[in-house]
Length: 212
View 1: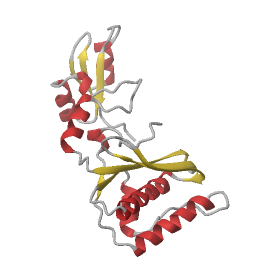
View 2: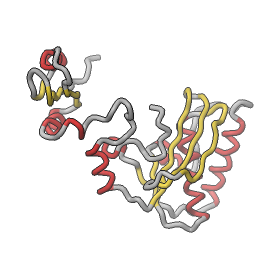
View 3: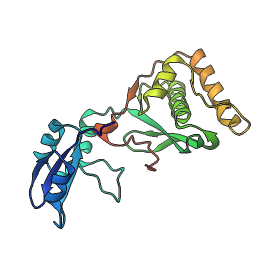
């Protein structure tokens, strides 16, 4: 299988511009102190990046989960802050799983569950979303809820956690929550709007555990 073509932008280097091969890009930055460069999947994205600022497309290695200035601008303009955000994290898949929900704007933690001894990231995302929906329902809140998981959103719509993980003594605790979540979905009318968090444009969801 051939590798997908990439386009390389060099903002600072021996030569600047958009290059169609890594070899050409490498030559443009070789031995250049403080070179600024990045790859993009399409020429259109590379052209847009080259006409912009390096800082808008690069996040610091020291804090790689912090949105770039461009992402921060998009968040400010596009995100509905009258909302909560949910996410999950797993150590291994299956492995230890935990999930939480936060206020989208302040990032104040509203709930946190786990870690559970064994589960999957998708199960955690599903539970986080249902927990958030139940919380807003109990509060009679008109807030919306953000998730970055298409799978969890699909499972919630179908009212079924469609995991392939076999049940065992080790994961009995998390499956007890799954059963409870499915029962809640099937006995309550969900009026809260569930929105997809646009990670590519906005950076990591505010509930992210920062382990990527």
